[in-house]
Image 1: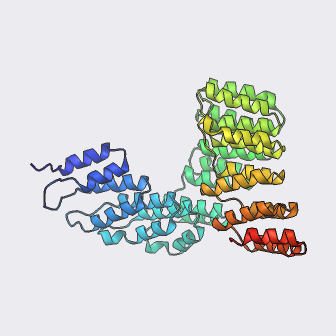
Image 2 (image 1 turned 30 degrees about the vertical axis):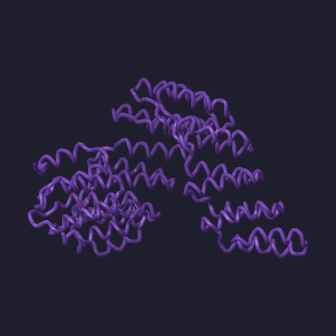
Length: 457
């Protein structure tokens, strides 16, 4: 008996299957015995391609795309390719995103501004700002731009610290009859605040409502509050927060976290409790970002007991500390030369169900090198490289210089082996090591030991 699954049933099963590998297996074998080619539906292709893309199973996704290209019963919709382009963008694969956009017509699918915007956004995620500019210069050959297009282009220029170009784009979109929206204004105001141009930012906030009829949103207010806190205008920041409450905008934790950070910096720690109480009164529950702001404030005051107290409170309140929470404390310990405590917390992280990331390793490695704890630093370096993390080049150079200065030839040889395997030895490191070898050759025993340790390289 043929256990063939109908195309409708296959789509239903694919939708329910959470495991992308099992979903792929199901897609590839919908019929156990039939010799006839299976007639996949457009929805089945859409579902499996989306699942594989989200799981970053790009090779399998591309194979399904090639299979779909042979279909003659239907043409895929543009939105599917928008998803694929976005998947590549999130994975910082700009070339693949561009290739997907270029081949959309080969699938008998017409490109519109929708896929163009997906491509521009993917390139923005990849920080490929030069390619965005190249596309902009010939944008008419791709599609007629809309407000979303200009928002991405303006964001790209702001990221490139080209505020004048961003303003030119703002003027250009208005000349084209494209109405700026809250995202347009939010992007420009955020860039102005980051550049400490608060007067211009507040003027634009006023104009967006009075001239364009666009009401400022939470993002606009948050950018302004961050900008004010950056220049220590705390009273104005709190006044702006009150304005948000009056406008019933629904303040999120980012606003309160910014204010908490500012209070710690201004040595107004006593006011933090009041801010936390207000958060709860306004139905805004402190989240990880809020607690991390408090941890950073405590560490900035070298009050590590209070920082650990915040960690405990997070757990009690049902807010799980993340890797940033621990990194802040580890960084604080390293800065104060309390390396043993930094190492203990680093080693304790897995037990707390939080695993060190590349930032954790880099901070601890740098701290150990600074404290001339070279054996421990070498151990962390090995573990770091094993996990695929890369230390900062300058940190490695300082580490090698420290080992050479200390004269630990055996450890230097082991470290150099690790660095060579990790392809992390550059010209500067070789110059430091070889010059040290030349000096040690004047002392036969030490010179011989160093040369022996480096022969395996």
